Amino acid sequence: MIELLLDILSWVLLLSGSFFCLTGGIGLMRFPEFFSRIHAASLTDTLGASLILMGLMLQAGITITLAKLIMILILSLIAGTTASHAMAKAALKSGMCPLDQVDRSQQPEIKAYKDKS
Amino acid sequence: METLIDIVLLSFLVLTALAVAKMHDLFAVVMLSGIYSLLSASLFLDLDAVDVAFTEASVGAGISTLLFLASLKLVGRYEKRTRYRPMLALGVVLATGTLLIYGTLDMPHFGSPDTPVHQHVAPRYLNDSMAEIGVPNVVTSVLASYRGYDTLGETLVIFTAGIGVTSLLRVSRRTKREEQQRVPADMQQQIILRVVAKWMLPLIMVFALYVQFHGDYGPGGGFQAGVIFAAGVILYTMLYGLSTTQKVFPRKMLELFAALGVLLYGGVGITCLLLGGNFLDYNVLRHDPVHGQHLGILLVELGVGITVASVMIMIFFKFTWRTVKHKYFVK
Amino acid sequence: MFAVTALTLLVVMALALARAFLGPTLYDRILAVNNFGTKTVLLIAVMDFLAGRPDFLDIAIVYALINFISIIGVLRFFEYAQQKTVEHGE
Image 1: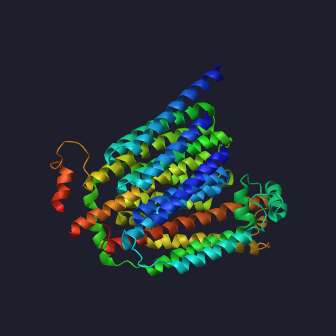
Image 2: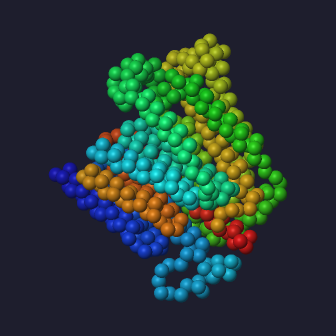
Image 3: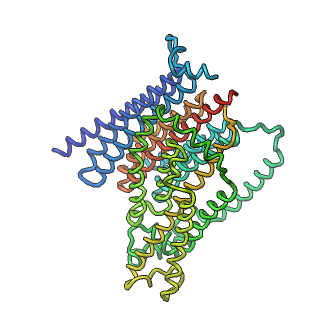
């Protein structure tokens, strides 16, 4: 009985995790410019990875595999989010502007870049 | 299912290789070769070769990308266009390739069980490894004990590469002063990355030690541990600057440790000679052959790990000092 | 159930690879490589359960670390280069 419940819960978590990863991939291809793509890719990446890893954790039982999966989850959360922060910051500092109607030439980073060059 | 994953990964590999050949922006080429290494490592996993996948991931996708980027800052970002069409070279390559493929048609099929290596060598290692050496991971027992002499040669190759790079690239005092002045301005802008890197660094080092000593029981060993340790130190260097890191890892200490690892490996071999056995015959190290093998493998893997870590850090430091000195070409 | 997840992950890896080939700016390519690396980590964890060998998870940890370190490396190198060209007034 408890086995069946764990299996159903694993199915749900794995399928929803795959769905989120898939939407992230589609967003990566179809959005028009870099900042919207990074929004799609990093958010869905983190969520999809967490759901898939939690689904796998339910299948593992109380073994060393469970401890390693928890470590992978924590590492993926911290490293993934920091990497996307670093990418967005580097793109902004190099002068790339997001594609919207707001006038960004007065923002401090972009102004500093344009004043220097 | 595994076959499907194999086919898909191999086709990705072909597409990536074609893209690498066609592109002219070398930064993009370096990124794509990182993807190429990740794909090959996944393929090795699918073929059940776990240790090889480990080494391919850490060396190919990690250290190689960083070293390529460091050298890319010195040479410029765009590939120079050739003004002639190398038809003669293409003809020679096609002819030689065809002859080689024709030559391999005589060889036995890939992975078939009646080749000579599967009749004599592999069964001997697989059947006798647990009894003679007592280490669960057969790859480590073959690498460090049955074929220990080859591994000594590989460690010496890495050491020689380190010597070559050190003797070719010198760093002047003026460069060191210039680098020290540049770093403090960065502190406020990179605060999230710096905090995360500082937090992660001890964990990376502990993980490298885990991989080193767990190599007897699972995938791992000296090479992978050395590369992971070096990658952690490189992460710290990228965010805090070379001068800060060199207070902890000064140049003389790195050179000493690189030599010390090789000395440890050769020293174990000579000790075996002095105790009455052959060179690198670990059976004579302790009262009992199996315990002798354990001790021998432990010391030898430690030597490999120390040398690989020191040489990787040394090469990265030398390349990065060079980029401080020269004007940048990258646009 | 693992097969479905593995197939979806392969499809996402193909999409990320396409973005790495196409992406007009360099940052698109860096983003695609980062995404590819994370999906490879997940694919290894799922393949471990498919094949039944618990050893693979060490490799997943290493991949996650290496992915992070190379992305930070690329960004630092690229940023240093931009800063230096701006300072030299090119």
